[in-house]
Image (cartoon, rainbow, N blue to C red; front, side, top):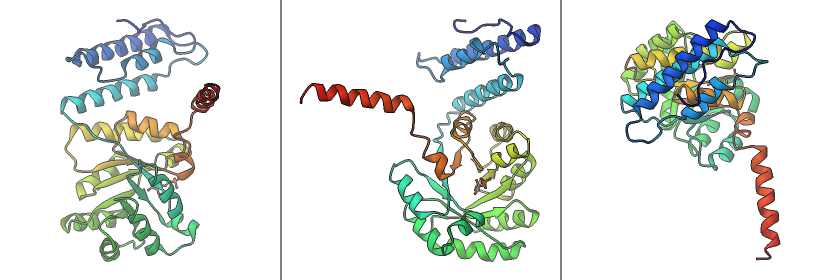
Length: 299
Ligand code: E4P
């Protein structure tokens, strides 16, 4: 197929690398075969470049190739099921000014707060949450009680503040009991501090509307945060959990791109990272040149 190569990459086991590239080419061909109406469903060409142009100094990583194939399979499966999800972007903050600023761009779907973020701002919690609810339809407010009854009481109070409030519940066995109760009462929940697939499954089964795996903190501990998202998304495609996967603890723009490639439903992003998302140096250079040239026309 055009654009793919099974040539071994220098510095790696040739036979093994050759096999991986061929498998990837087959995956790409399978996806192209799905493209019945002649319209490209997936950015196949960019994938081909990854296979063909792996720099010789940086051998193609086996895990990346496998993850790439996994991403393809998930996208194909979602498309075959007729799913057309829209990725949601949340701001990870307790700063109302930042929420107002990004919401004005027209791209913000929600906010996640946590006790540490609230402490950093030093403002009243309820007033902060209510102010944020004016800007976005989904604001996570975390309970601080640790037993199920305490969480339920606190969560019921939070949810009475505004219909945009989502009760954030920590991933503990007491939290699971509270989730079940919140679901039965129609109170929306977000399970926080998820670090494994088993925790994700339990939270979804207990009735969480959202689960938040923390990828940056896993990376900080020398684990593979985005690998956890890939695994959770694969499980989610096999079953019918009524629960969105929110990629939390993101650290840089690439995390958002990778979360999107894996089909994660939501990504929560710190303000400093969100502010980088619209930027590209070539956009600045290009606009400067357009405006200079326009001036020359004297119109
Ligand atoms: C998510 O809801 C959390 O508030 C957040 O993403 C934690 O991120 P951190 O690891 O940067 O504190």
